[in-house]
Image (cartoon, rainbow, N blue to C red; front, top):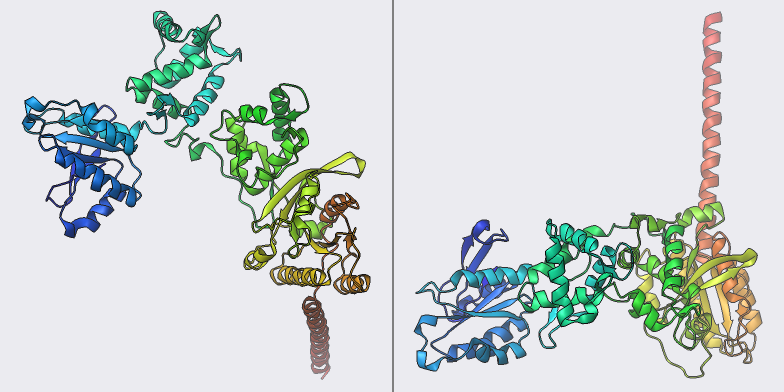
Length: 610
């Protein structure tokens, strides 16, 4: 804790209060700061280290209050100090009794402007009036802050608090009947406060709720509405510690998110390994999908998806890069494949987020069992077969080649003639049906042309890539040349780093006339680099030539379709030559050793006969 006092000439001096000074048994260190200009930098350092800040003014000098709003509070914002602020009116004993003004009247305008002010209090050091309370409120503001829970302006629980309490309610509603029975209320009380409720207390709690909010109680017990109302009531009456105790018993931190230690760390993996969901996680998500598909139309509409994630701090699919990455129907609904695809993408990019959100939506088992680490890609190449269920495809190509249109077609979106240049990476994910009824999930990651150099500046840039696709406008020779350059750059990077990837060339805009000598050029490049001939497609006509199935098939056989540059070919020939030379040297050395041994045997026999 730190105190920032406006108008004192003392240097920063720490004063320690023992841990048994207050009921919470948390030690407090008070730093009294200086107002001398030469100490400004030191004061700024102390402010940034503080857990809470006490700003003081003199009750008998109203003009000192102006300094808080004109200097100290703006200064805290300028320093980006985001901790609770307690405003304290000192020298209460000296205030003119004929000019009595309520604290609420004095502070209301400032508190409206500066929401970081947690509470206000008046005191007198001379007459020992409310001095301990000042630091009690400062401590309370840190341990039980109002800001994350309650909106003072609307006098309502904040959305994130409601989401957390809703999850806690569902976890305590063991029979899933939408209400907390007397037994469930008692279990809740014991878990959170280590003490049972007496039958009369349970009756009293329900009576208070029913009088104020009839729908808060029904014949089965306390409803979710009543449960939330109770917590709003606690907070309004200043009993924030009650709600915070409940939240912390269920693992929430001050940001009202599950504490880090409750979310297992993903298993360590090498750069060329990825993470996928296990069958247990997928089965749980299938059941969850059916539960929240309330209209039974086989899709989760936006309101149904929001309800599914209503016990999480936020719907993860409403954030980038997931928000626009899956196929949706005309009503904005996600099919089961689209829903599972979103989860597959999140698991690929951020497995910890998958585990965290599975906890929020009620996964019942050990959440660490919901993900698995795949085999190394290098081993897949050696085995000539990939066992993965989720493949990531990097999509390269020059501007206006048709990369974005390719991703849109993958998500079932209509073709548009409007050109909207994409300067950021973008993802598209969907399920691809393979022969034999096998389903694989394909993630397309569009790499803007301007972002290729930045991507390849990392040694491990291609480690996460299962297959790369190079798109060019088949009617534009410059587009073909640039796509070929990108192919060489990527192939060279793979050869240099050891993260080689299969590559396919896609000739987009097949509905337009090809540039002269297109076939000749593409055939020569394909033969020289050892790749398949370009795959012609037209997103405008919807003729995709089974492209996505071909991409998955190529990714499943990672030893094939790997391009070879001239430099890479020369390097391999050099290594073969060196290896052959070493073999010759080794054989020669072996012959020499055998010859020397034979000579020694001969010499020994000759000496013996002599």
